[in-house]
Length: 100
Image (cartoon, rainbow, N blue to C red; front, top):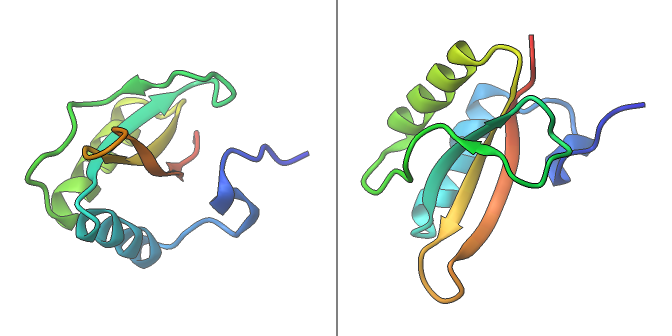
């Protein structure tokens, strides 16, 4: 059985270009990118890799995703698009890397 973690988990793994487009969308919306990781993806709370990226571009977000995956090869790594306005809540979240 395949573990379904979020909407994109029903699709084949995203390519690097597709991940870049999703990051661009998050940034274009004014949402803050947050990199999280977890060994057990069914857990409600994941660990933050770093603080929300206030002034990041696509390349910086990719670099943080890669650094997190390298530091935690046994973990799932996801990207969250956090909306700092209004209700201050996640607007997008998807797994970018799975354990090796």
